[in-house]
Length: 194
Image (cartoon, rainbow, N blue to C red):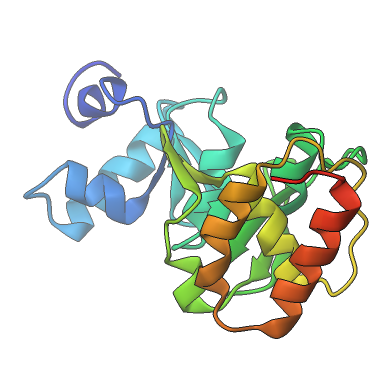
């Protein structure tokens, strides 16, 4: 595995790749040759096939990378972020992803839920953190994404939220009166002044 094309993959922190990314990484390789090499590496267990056109270096890949490679642009948000930061107490096995489509799929034992966001919101990087191999919403952005898609949502614990950050991100959702009103109501419920 350490020779040739795969040697390039070993040096990268990224653990999940699309076929298109592999072709770009292996610059100068035509599609047929790249396809034949990928097929060979999968057959010899040097690449792990996850889904049509999506591969991992091995079985120890990051599921968040997988989720955001399936649909692009996309980022981890909603209950995945809210649960991890203690804003909701309900545990979900599913990975929630903001994208331009809505669907639920299972890939390699990982249930992934894609929720539709308007493209101008989806592509605005305010409140989005770039991590190694994927993008993830801040707790404040995940909160606002959830409020945007749900008129009434029960948040278990609003204490971790930074309301100044919420108000900094809020303009990307446009002039939606409902959003401003909902945020004001949740802010009042939080008991925080700032």
